[in-house]
Every structure is written in C-alpha cells, then in structure tokens.
Image (cartoon, rainbow, N blue to C red; front, top):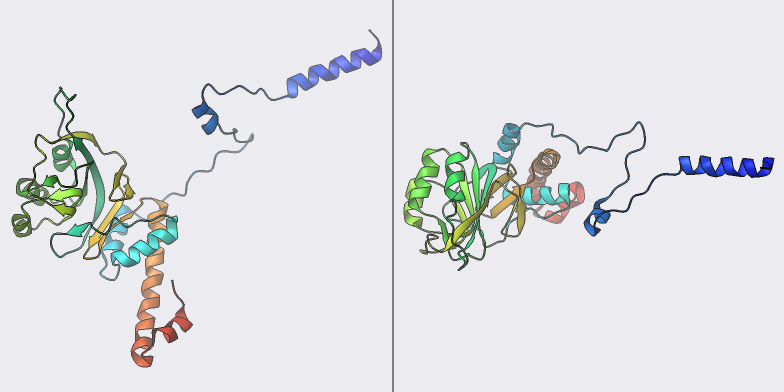
Amino acid sequence: MSTRSLTAAVMVALAAVAAPVLTAPSSPQAAATQAPAPAAGTSAAAPPAPTQSPEAVISALRRPENSTGNIADAVEAASGARGWMSPDMKPISAGKIVGRAWTAVMRPVLKSDTRPYPNYLLQVLDEAPAGSVLVYVMQDGLEIAAMGNLMATTAKVRGLEGTVIDGAVRDVTELRAIGHQVFSRRVSPATSVGRMVSVSKQTPVRCADVMVNPGDYIVGDADGVVVVPQGAVADQVIALLKDYDARESKMVPIIQREKSMLKALEIYGRY
C-alpha cells in the first residue's frame, strides 16, 4: 500500500471513531421527545426552587388586600397563563378560602361498567390534611352534586379549608349552617350515587377551564376562584402582589384628592 493510500485509510478510521453514533428513535413519540444530551461537564438546567414555605405563601395569599382579582393578574404576569376559573364558579356563602389542592375526578356510569369502583371523592375527603381545599371534577356531570350535608360535615370536622366543584352542590341551606365554604358551577338536588363513578385521585385535573395540580394553591372569594401554581411561580406571585398593593395604596390618596384615576396612573402606571 502506498503512503498516500495508508494515510487516507487512517483518516477514514479516525473520522469513524470521532463521529457521533445516531440511533433512530423507536417511535414517533420518541422522535418528538428525544433531546440532545448535555455537553460533557454540564448538567440539564433545573427549574428554580421555591424560596418561600407553603405556610408563608398561604399566609400572604390570605391577606385581605390580595383579592382574587389581583392574584389572577399576578398569576398571568408570572406564568403567562390564565389562573382564574370559569366565571360560573360561584361561592355558596361569603368568605375567602386559601389552601392547597387535593383532587378527585368522577365520570358518568357506562353500560360497560360491571366492576365496583372506589369512591375517590370520599377517600380524599378522609385523607386530605387540615387546611386543604378539595377540588372535585365531575366530568360531563355539571348537573350532578358532588357534595351535600354529610360530606360537608365531614370536611368541617376535619378542618378542611373549602371545596371547589366543577359540577354541582346540594343541601345549600344546610351547608351554610355547617360553615364549610363551597364553590361550585351549579346547584342541583341530583345525587352522584348510581350516576357517576370515580376516575382518579390526586392527579392533575382540568377544573373549570384551569389546570390544577395536587398541591397548587387555591384561592376563592366573592369574585371567583384562582389557581396559583406551586413552586417558583408562587414566589413570583407573592412578590408581584406586594408591588401591586404598594402602588394601589399610593394611588388611592391621589384619586381622592384629584378625583381622577388618570392622574394617578400618570405617576404610578398600570401594573
């Protein structure tokens, strides 16, 4: 072999060794999710960790100046996503609730349903710690009540903060006397027994047009219900709420003195 041929063979061999090995993904889904590995000596970026404890976040969200209106603005500014539930999510009585979500889902009974199903609504009612907010989703069952007087009594004696129902509630007069705060999209006497079966518990759910993950912060007042995502977004929301309150407290005297909101906005702007 000539010197030129030997050199060329060596170069081809070296190129083969240095070239990255590419393997075809096993499925279209794998192709869509396959990502390049981090470069040597580096690691994939992790999402920022929250800096405030859940107790601190709940305490801040509970402050009277932090209405669901301001919280909804802050969630959208911090996450770029809507946090407020459908406007037909209404409270059955006055009062604000703030707590972390415990979720459960039901769906209509099908003719093919032959096995017994666990009742996840009752399970999370018994399992959620004090201060939690139950989030019940009645798939294709807006007219079906997910809670009545007995469940509300259980929630009250267990110290739960409230219940949010993408569906209906019943026994409203009794619930008001019991003192367990409920937000629902409907009021209906129709029971779920024989009509609905459980699907899941403590899973991400879509409730009244908003995603809710177990552990997210739920805030409800006379204006409606807002979901504050847990983690770093919650930290940003709390910081924004402090800024909103500081601006509004300075704008009110100007509005009272000048009788003009425009003049206050000229100084402090619109958040």
